[in-house]
Image (cartoon, rainbow, N blue to C red; front, top):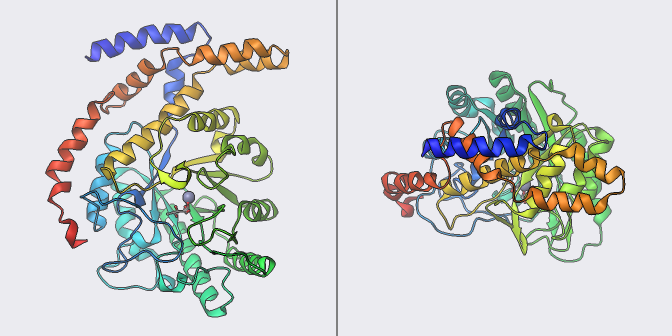
Length: 425
Ligand code: RNT
Ligand code: ZN
């Protein structure tokens, strides 16, 4: 089988050489692109903060009841390890602050300290992974009325400001120990179900909270902040305080990173198109790659046209060092480890597809007004032997080629996941 894969690759390599594309160089580049794999796919966004935690505030919920959800850090790390063993390249893991190691004690969110994350840091060191972190401003009684950093209650606002400050400090410690900046993401659920009358009031409060939070400066070699807007949520259909316009303006004015979650826009908007519109004005971008079906449903990412367009724009931006890739979806209706692998491999495939394009030729057509040629070429690219290059990439990086990884997930499900008692979580 390996011989067949190599043979197919050799043929594909020559086909791409014809277009002036060196597949070897591209595979080296692809291997160096880390993807931040979201830990919360493994525990249905529930965290390990308190036993029987129920989601409240924020309206984000994983639907499905597939057996085998990770119930503690050890299980989550084991599951992540399994997923990572099926994904080529070396990656990052994106944690939520409620994934901390609280030793069975209840620790309030404004009391989080780096020591609760040492277990993750040690694991990352051992596995040669890097970590990112998200403040967690949902699933908490103080988020129950739908407001956190823009709350009109001074006490609630202060509590959440403290939480985010703690998470920034933790991020800096993570980055320091792992010798790579930890990206700290801020997303808040704040908004209203029905028509607001004081949009300005809430947004002024959010601006003030962010100003206060970002006052403390950390070395960018340790941590970087990024802020994530949203279009609407369950229970915040009429008004979202932290909208895209709000954070885009804030990011430009304060030169902070912006997160674009591909599920957080009107369904016909192209997130790919936004990259070149934003990058000239802010230092860096973070992507939360997701797949909305009819709405921001957070389905598992697949190799869709939207994803390919996004990857093409990332590659063509010539600023890939300023664009950070992460995943954000949660599906509890299928094998959760399989969900990680499908999504991550899909993103890598989309990047490979984008990297294997003779961009100079296409751009020349465009500049010469040869639009028929441009369109025809783009169409022909779709049937070039991209699959054999992907297969060879997997082979070269010692992960299962093609669908053979499905069997490995089935085995893990039988040996590990089915033994977890789903009634105990
Ligand atoms: C919610 C945001 C946010 C979350 C994670 C769990 O709509 O996309 O990024 O999905 O923080
Ligand atoms: Zn997101």
